[in-house]
Image 1 (cartoon, rainbow, N blue to C red):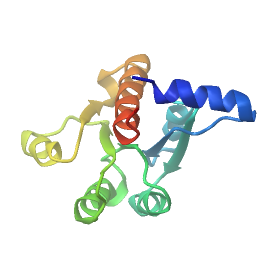
Image 2 (cartoon, one colour; image 1 turned 135 degrees about the vertical axis):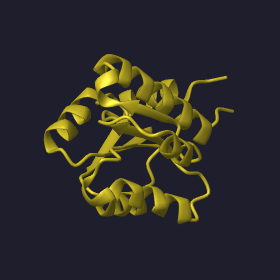
Image 3 (cartoon, rainbow, N blue to C red; image 1 turned 120 degrees about the vertical axis):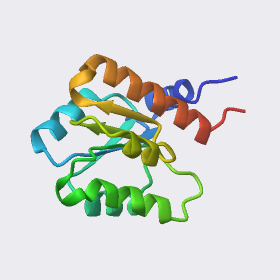
Image 4 (cartoon, rainbow, N blue to C red; image 1 turned 90 degrees about the vertical axis):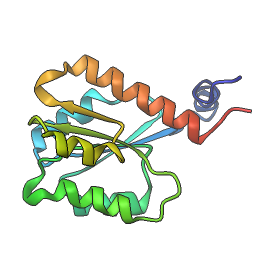
Length: 151
């Protein structure tokens, strides 16, 4: 089985510019943390969009549905939940992988509510940047392979 990233990396060399194979959306209302996450997660063949509100995130998803969304639930005015509700009600056939990245511990009932739509929940103070990066890239690669199966 061929690896699609290997094939596209070869194509990138031929055409002389990177071919985007994965699309990530980071939703975070803290501009400094948003910038840090964007830099931390940069890599070849990855397009990163950012949003500082649920409304901006919804517009970004309507333009191009990402493979993976990193969502801070603590957006002002509970907007993080607004994005979840929009995804829940949308008629998107293949939902993106959703990763919650939050500053606070969640209550058991909150965890249960999120499990239907969430792949992973990370507490910001409990995961190192290196481990977070590795987890995100593993999830992203898995989602890209699933959406572009090799022949």
